[in-house]
Image 1 (tube, rainbow, N blue to C red):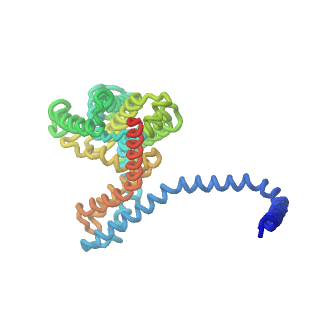
Image 2 (image 1 turned 90 degrees about the vertical axis):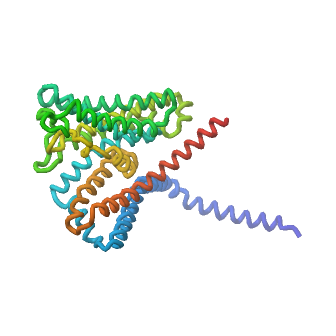
Image 3 (image 1 turned 45 degrees about the horizontal axis):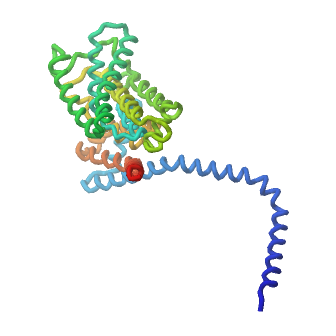
Length: 398
């Protein structure tokens, strides 16, 4: 028995039915297909943009829950503790001002790390560049100039000092292949002990040997809110973040830098000099880190000087790494993350006094929140490094 006539008959009926349906609906389909595709693309774009925000919010909730469990384990009320934390961070004008003042240097040191990450480097040298930038700003106080010029000169000197301090790191990377993590750690320690020597023997205050000479009045940054430490260094930091945003996403230099950081092999085939990008990244990072040291010493009362032991500077470079990861290495995200980080610093002090949470436990809770927020970007970074290593291995093997 043959099934060919039956198959042909059924197939013909199906074709006729399909053609009839198509003839009825094709006009509407053609008219709507453009809007449907556009809607799908817009929805996918929105989801892609909201995904990092939702991921960060979820990480924050998880961090707060872990912190609450830790406080409960030690017999403290997490609701009262978190209430004091956020009241001290953003509960008043004074709290907001102190949180923003804490955020100012963190924006700049986070930019140092973020620019390097966009260029495919792991630059942790902001700490040392911060120190030399602060000392350079103090040294300019020895020159007598009118106020606006004096401020600009001090800021430029700090940026130049940070760039010069990062230059040997770039040269070691380019000429000897020394990994930037190793060289930046070494130069951080050199900068630390050099700063202690300069404080004690070069720029020493004749009346107080434990600090440098104070920044003169003509070189100080005015305060935005009287009675607080918030100064116009915040405006400088925001301008720097916007400038980095423009350079990275609106210039040829920034495009080449990001391509080189994403895959150096493709950049090489495209005619982009990876060596030039390394130099550009490290010098840009040195400038922003040096600027962080300047605004910290020029705008934070009461001493307007660098103290022995560097208490107002130490760890700002390393904290900037956490801020950059929370902000997904994007200048706008860094501003938001720095404000959040600065709020934790300001609110942590209130958290000690109101519910009576010990300082050590406050630091543990803050650390847990920061780590959970940084985990998504850290995962992305590790995945990026793994892919780059695999591509390089394939390229070298071929």
